[in-house]
Image 1 (cartoon, rainbow, N blue to C red):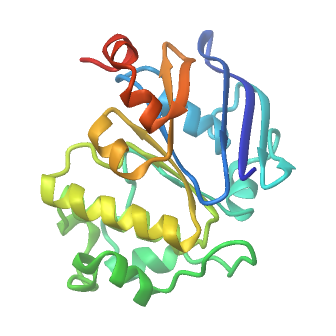
Image 2 (image 1 turned 90 degrees about the vertical axis):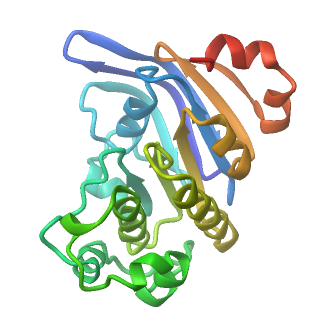
Image 3 (image 1 turned 120 degrees about the vertical axis):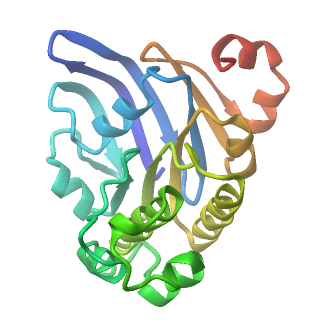
Length: 234
């Protein structure tokens, strides 16, 4: 098992946000964490990567318990995180942003070079010397993912990768995620867009009010319109 999360509880101050969240991700699997805005998707990711200090539960990554480790230690083990806010360096060029993300080659993860990333995201190849602040939202999203891959992660948490993107950019994002999977990267995608999740994911969890309320394959979820209408309809 690539990632196992058990009994995850998280707080922001006195507010209890996550309640006994449990999920698993297998080798080379793409898993969706589905839910409406405010359901707890981003907090789940931030808790896994160690950015929420007030949390309890057990997080095992590649057989190692990382529950009490700081973010930099978790990342150094090969767990990548692409936040919803992107957080690129707007004053740095594409090449410079990628260089910031560089980490050593890992024995259990694919090795990404700039050339491979420019094949993955051809748009970036055409703007290597452009600063992040002069890129569109979709281009910034591509750059954020590419910068994370420069760290050679074996698993990536992608927070709302399709949000606010044009249909054309969404198509490119789907192709990129499929290529990442083929390369051997395990992926967890938090999404509201069920159609996007269908195109890339093997299984899905649904979170509502900080609790996992459903898990199953995408085919099983498609066969349950009652579940979709109850937990995902806007």
